[in-house]
Length: 259
Image (cartoon, rainbow, N blue to C red; front, side, top):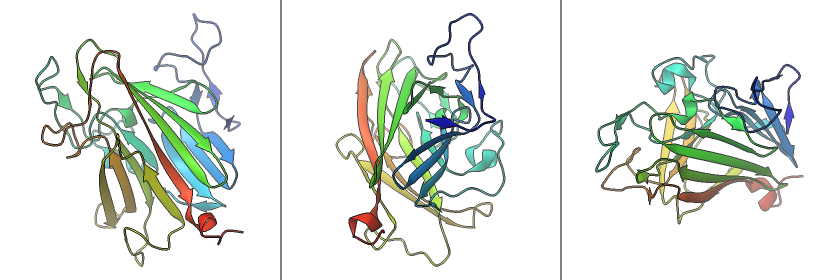
């Protein structure tokens, strides 16, 4: 893992140097870069662990937004929709369903994870923990010649059962002449662990929402863009963990087209 020259390393004033820092003191403020094979990623831990850039052989795959970056905004779009975020514990603003001690708690637009500073654990792993609900999400990214593999671990760190809702939110570049198909001649394939994340949403915007032009493929642990009782995510007991994976592959290399 390589951080850019201007990145500031911050450590707790009362603890020895360590990667395991409090969320209020993220390990790195600035851009973290990962490189492997033809892939390059840029991540901002303090900005919700957002993957701001994903390049394949120099080609940018993620949408880079329209110049808005205001993490203090109430809503996700108003804060600046771009890159790749993790949606936990919901997407649509909603009330947490019951039964249990969290019933009726208001969950904000697009959840908490994109609003929180993430802690850098090691060269491949970052994590963050909820403040409204007691969850912890760890994300490990591994680069290989043909793919980017993202591995997740969700933990209930509370004392009551908890719906383990997660949704990937990669916003890819969308151009007006693109066709959206289940299969086709595309530079990138996306696959995921259907045993744990059996739901998927597709978001396409061609400028109608604030000028954004994006396409998102959003696998999720539950349906309905939130912990929905009709299509619920897994329920974790206190201390229980849930793990799954997502992969972005170089479709050109698989087809023998990439030099």
